[in-house]
Image (cartoon, rainbow over all chains, first blue to last red; front, side, top):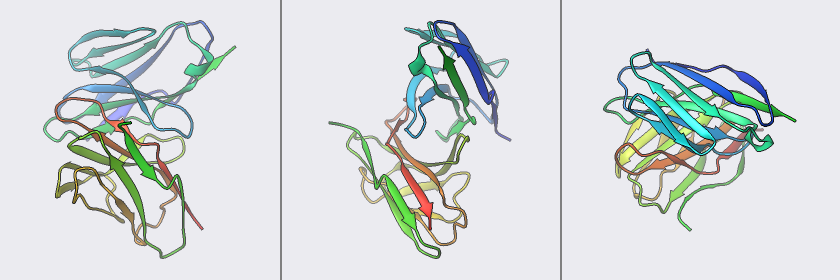
Length: 110
Length: 112
């Protein structure tokens, strides 16, 4: 079956660093996406990994290990506006279907 | 401006009624998707279409129907067979290859 696991909720302090983990078991793998979703709004694209390693984009970085079925999203210098849900999504082979995790709700405290 | 539009933003459905949610994109994207999101949950795939006049069922297609007569448009009908339709519905589109999906602003459907 297809399964993507993320922690339900995390809390961190403004200015700190937080790591949001995502583990997956899917039938085939064509890439992993991270999205940010503020309450009541649509998800917006943050990052994409298809090869093992770290992708850095400003305050956001994402890491992938295909052999371990594992990814994380690293947010540095947290700001209050980073309070949102973070969704991990895996694209399966051949079908271009995106399988989403349930999302991690991040609260940034002053 | 290029983008994806969904209408209406809020939609109310009476018991036994079919309703249609609109999704239009002017990004010239080939693939389009419909997702359902329940409170505190991730996105679940209802239907997707890779090209015009072709679409496939997702994981929760029962009680829903779609059409893809034009590249720009992918309307979703929530039929009376869908017994628990209250949710946030998101439409997305993607160009070919391994590009990200871009999402519309969503439609919140409520049952009266």
